Image (cartoon, rainbow, N blue to C red):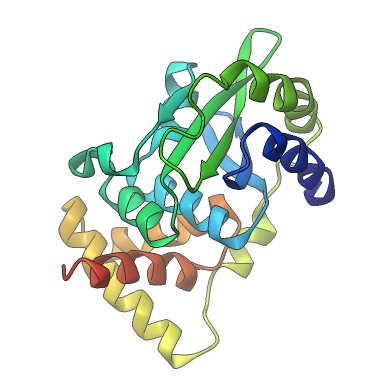
Length: 213
């Protein structure tokens, strides 16, 4: 699936040369998760959305494309962690499009670019690249992610444990939940994005550190 995605990315880069990454999310029984991404950086951006909100989640919810033409235009009060994650990754624009199968939203395609306004007036071309392929990919996806949950659990190194503990404090304070619930949310975001919990934690911490938060 990752190899197939790279083929779509290559086609999309002919339309948007500044494209830096793409992910494909599936939604089943009300749960949205990334099952293929073009890079770990893109998967991490997805994880921050699952943790604290973002255009991918919103595009699937409202069944409409959402173009964030300029990273500086993001309302950080709404999607703070995602906004900071984009900035740290050098992403200046994002486009999230719902995937429809039989008239029903079954997933979403997320595209990230390094230039503000990179996706403007290019929705239809990009939808042609990803539309039918994404719908077929979502339909045939393996929707089991127990193995993801197991892989995202106990970190192997002490520094990873420390990073997770710090990020738990940040999430607990920001979202007004207990540290137990904050830890659960970090693990869940990593599972949905297919990355380890400590990688989500480091994304949270690095973005805050860069802003002096």
